[in-house]
Image 1 (cartoon, rainbow, N blue to C red):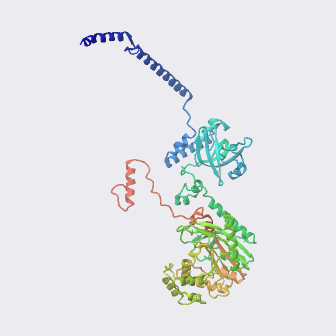
Image 2 (tube, rainbow, N blue to C red; image 1 turned 45 degrees about the horizontal axis):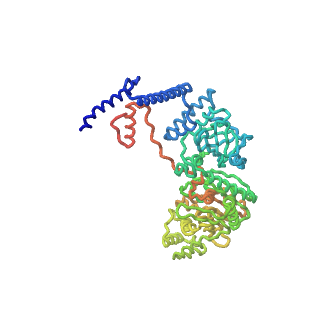
Image 3 (cartoon, rainbow, N blue to C red; image 1 turned 60 degrees about the vertical axis):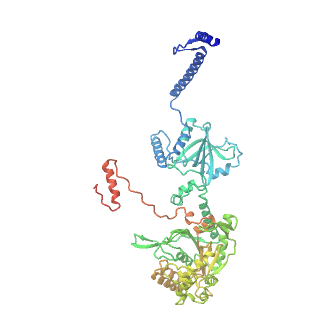
Length: 633
């Protein structure tokens, strides 16, 4: 109780001591301890210093003007846009630049000329030997190509320059740029992925060993106004329809896309060299003909305005080339386009490229030997081996062995053997003149039914029925190269009759992976038999076969002047390219294949955005469905 009584006295003493230590804050007038005031004053001093620094920075920024953006900032911002926004922005920017150049205040984004010292492949060949990290400051070069990548790292801007199947890295920094850092900022801010760019600079290599050029000058040679698909590699653009309709885009963004066409060009050069080395003369024959002859195919028809007649786009150059031989050009060939108004599928395009040659004093045996030698030689030259991989559209990948010699399979004997293997007796096909018998069509139809093979499309002529059986039983089984020989005369109106087997001809077709690659025969040079053959073909035309041949009287008259014993040969360049580039669609080996028309875009809305215009647009849409609108005109 004594201690409790003394507590108030002690509390009063403590409070009096604290009051003596209190001081007044001059800013707020508040009373606080000396320690609290010191802390507050330190904080105020620090805040004042920060504010002073901020004010100085703002004053400096105001004096210097707007801060420059990074040379990558504009490109990175553009990458976030929608493609139509990107296109609109780029068009506007390039049009402004063009107008400025016309006013003498800048450089056109579409200059007339840029002088190069090297193509990109030449540059790669000349400077690939430089050491990693080296730079040849004593050498100045100028190159040009398409910039397919843009990236930044600090004060370095990188581009990948592509052209001619080669790639060179641009390593751009402001210290090396001869026009100064401001000009360097401007040009690098302007360039985008896809632009065609000219570079003047010093050759060198990065520290990682990538062949590069260190630019002293960059120039936009042609802007890419569209946003390109993003990514790198061989399948950046995957949609087949877009790739074939816009082949330029496929070649631009898909690495290695040009290799197929480089192989194709190499094959054409190889065929040409093989024939030139053997004394052949390359010639050109008409693309438009009065008679669609030279092959069993449906022609395109066009109109010759000056003469007022319809003419046919050629289906084959054969008849003209044989007339050259009649005239004394004993060895001739032509590499060119043919046109056939037939279906489009994986191996057929309405216009395609063939090579045909004609060789006096040769027969189909000689041509088989030449075919083995030529084709196997081309395969070895392109791939370094006779064996190539080929992936058909359906089924497993195949290994095709082009090593000569290749099997030679007589057509009718092959059919008898294959039909016999599935229990169908077709020995009648081996009899002389079997296909000329009155009941030949009925027997061929019976063979179809017994073998459970669907009929071909009408008309069911002997030639079409035999061809259908051969396609099912022989051609599809030819994976490695194989010759199918001795076709019936009904299927070969221009081939010479077999010297030992009546009713057959001295003809062969080369098949690889189930597809025809070459067709050749000993040429029919008897004008009387030729007229008979044309007459038989005319009957098929009358029966509705629009692929049968019409009579060409001019050709028959040429034969009456004497065609030497001759061998004729044809090969599809497109299919040969398919096999040697492992492409299962002919559209992959044609730069611009035939395509179905794209759907028409919807009609544009009427001009103006007033209410009446909107109503008219709605009425037009309703009218498209055959409904009479209740409003509008």
